[in-house]
Image 1 (tube, rainbow, N blue to C red):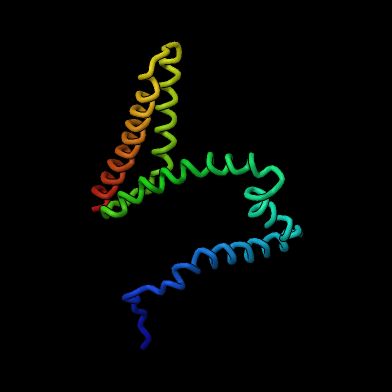
Image 2 (cartoon, one colour):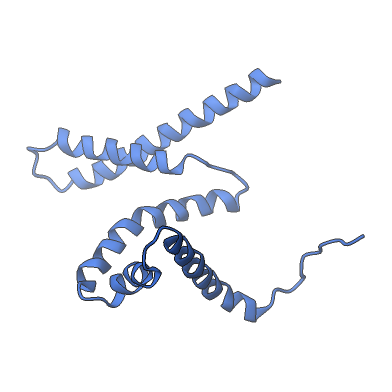
Length: 149
């Protein structure tokens, strides 16, 4: 009988090649999807991978990539702390959205005020909003587990 065993020491070559192979596999399988849709896969891959970084309007696209990636990076960083502690959190996007809503509402509620305290208060209230949403999800999951026992 065959048995899979984890390597005690991962290969340094594969650690370096894995991201490159992942992008190449994405380009190949994504290109096949575009072929099946009847579109030119080279135009699609150029538009997805090349234009945002080095294309004609790359200056605009790079900023937009950062704007769209920043929330995902913040969510990933927050989740990484929990995962290292052995705590699973599957509601991070909802917590981020609720934090943004509460933080934005705080800014709107304090709109006429022109003070240095408004922005830190928005961050604090956004953090509390995300925390409360996470607590709501955690308590409802805990209640479901108790009901099923």
